Every structure is written in C-alpha cells, then in structure tokens.
Image 1 (tube, rainbow, N blue to C red):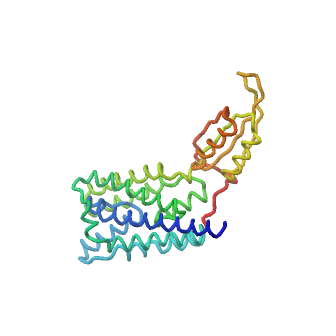
Image 2: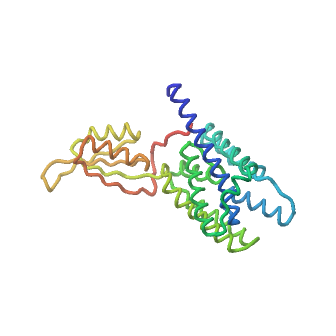
Image 3: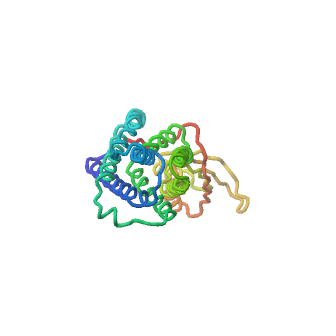
Length: 292
C-alpha cells in the first residue's frame, strides 16, 4: 500500500476509534447511569464491580482502572493470535473510552438524563451498537468480549454475537441477584438491542452464498476475484425457457461484499440471475482480510 494511502487509512482508523470512544463514554454517563443498567460484557462487569465496591465497601473505584485490568489478558491474547496493530488500536479505544468515562465534563453528562428506564435501555443499546460498530469499521474492537467474538469468528467462521449475548445474560443474572431484578431485566433489553443493531450495522463476519446464472462466466468470475478476493465454481446448465446454454457460478463471499459485487455484475451482464443465500457456517479455505 502506498505511503499516502497508509497514512489516510491510519487517520481513518484513529478518527473512527476516537468517535467510538466518545460515544461509548457518553452513553455510559447518560443512558446507562440514568437507567441503572448493566450493559453486559467487560463494560457491564466493570460497572457491576464499581457498584459492589460502593454498596458493600463504601469506596469508589475508577471505571478505567477496573476496565484496564479486565482487558489486560484478552488484549494480550489478541496481540498474539489476531494481530499486533489490531490489538494496539483496540487498546487505544479501551484507554480513551475509560479515561473519558471517568473524566467527562458534567455539562455533557447532564445534557441527557432520562427518567424512563425502558427508553434508556433501548436508545442506550442503539448508541452502544453504533460505538462498537465504529470500532469494528476501524478494524479494531472495544475490547473485552468483542475480542472473544472476533477470535471465534476468525477461527471458526461463525457469527459469535449470540453466544456473547448468552454470556452477558449470566452477568445480568448476577446483577439481579445482588441488586434489583428489574434493572437486570432492563439491562437484558439493552443488550438485546445492542446485539440486534450491531448485526444490522456490521456484517463483515457473516457470509453469503451467491448463485449466479449467466452467459458471461469468465468476466463475472474475474469480478468476483478482483472485488472480493474469493473464488468460484462453475456448473454447466441449460436454460429451459430460451433453450440456451447457461453457466452457474457458485461462490461464498463476505456479506459486506455482496452489494458492490452485484452492482459490478449488473454492469457486465444486466441479464444475470443472482440468488443470494445466507450462509451459517463455512468450512475449508475462505479468504479473510488480515487485521494488520
């Protein structure tokens, strides 16, 4: 990659991460605190530990100190198995969001304080999903269970967000047992909203199967290769309607490559018939863009 493109890419990653950090800290200090919610993941575990220390020990631990400690081991694993730059950019997000959570000016915190817990859960969950997706689009993560989700996605080619949601429910059950059940139930709504919105906002770790019927198979295969870095398998067929020879290309690509690829195919063969199928799991060689 040329130096100017590398610099622009680095700037893009930093800007997205800083924006995600600000949104996450703002969300914690407004929607989350207003509703008394436990978001789940390491952020929720951090808030849970803070609350336990305050209620039972009568002392306050800074959010950043707890969150940094919890993220230390997953960050080290990420650094070793996923990518060094990926881990370092993720640590930037963790450090900045932690500091902002502790030191965000009161004028921003007091800007939005809802008295309806359900509204706090729904809109807080949406804002949480946006902040996490900004990090993912920067090829980084907000830390904690996101490290685990990405590790599973890369190793097993499976969407892991539902598994993370189940693990978060365990944290929320603990919160309900220690404190009040209604806050834990509202927190489940918060986390469900985050999970659903995140799957809609960011689908890079999902795969789609394309069945493309065309009479320009060589040109379309070249598009698949150039646009997605994936291959394709050709099957000879016969069109019963017009009694003509056809070729069907079978390919599995990343979900975020589907729309650009379809647009490119339509420019080459406007009459191509394309069937897009959701793919639950892929075994075998499947190109995954490297993190570093």
